[in-house]
Length: 313
Image (cartoon, rainbow, N blue to C red; front, side, top):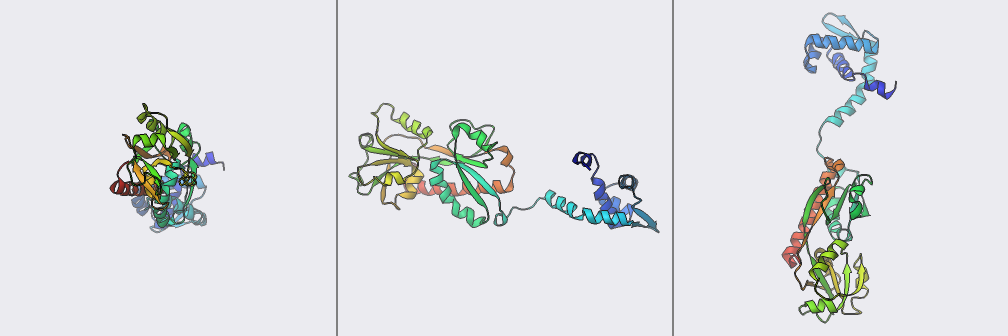
């Protein structure tokens, strides 16, 4: 039988057959099916027509199933149980989750938010699989829909509608200097910032444009390096009096590890919001909701710690 033909059949009748076999009584089956006794009798008639078998013989007040009725009940036992489990709401348990998640991230998120959140994620869900892809602002909707990316972590450059969005928190920009830098224990001035050799790390084009706007009437910076990852700047940080501009959370996480000094930007700069973004197809998935919640909670902890320790800048 073709799938379309099955679709045209009333498969609820098979549920009724199972109940009739279990109860051995039209009146008792009617109670379980929430039908009248006459309606249940009509259901039995439709079953006999569908399956081309009397299905039951009467013995006193009892319905005795035929061998075909018993055979069909045995065959549908497992499929009906599978449907029952599928349609029964269950509590999501991350420790048993084996899902694979694809996350599009910026360089900043890959170096800060995700490493900070990963220990908690894998502590709670050790059997999941995570894969990361570079975020493409100009193709964000495509990544989250046809490219099957489950969520993105970024600073939106505009409206993300009709996608869903949850703000993770404010991200500022800070400067890093070597502990051996001439200004390590001094105030970093705007003149220093502009004239000293400069590196920009994990700063997206959107954030770079915000920095450029803040320095609109100043001379161009002496840019010697722009890179995705901090390692490039670390290779030369002791070779010249380098000023490294980085997202504030990245500065907070790496300063002590690499013997660097955090300095606030020497000009006014408003922190920007980072967000989690996802497509409607992922909105109601229990595993997706759980992962978004953990990322949001851990990111919130990171930002709160950094704000408490070194402020927004």
